[in-house]
Image (cartoon, rainbow, N blue to C red):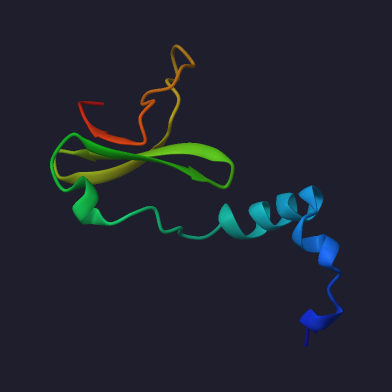
Length: 88
């Protein structure tokens, strides 16, 4: 059993430890991004950071889809606002 009391306080601010936790936890598990009611209408979107990535969750015709917030052709941001309503 792991004894949390034996952890060094430096682990809570260590960039190396954060990178390990990001890779092991945040990239492999479902993450809460927001409430479905926040993007209930078609073309509503949220922009959030997830595991060091800029992600958008977009309502496309009633289906919620998540994307890395980068155009694969122009390598620019798709959405610059944190939330809004416009076509993808």
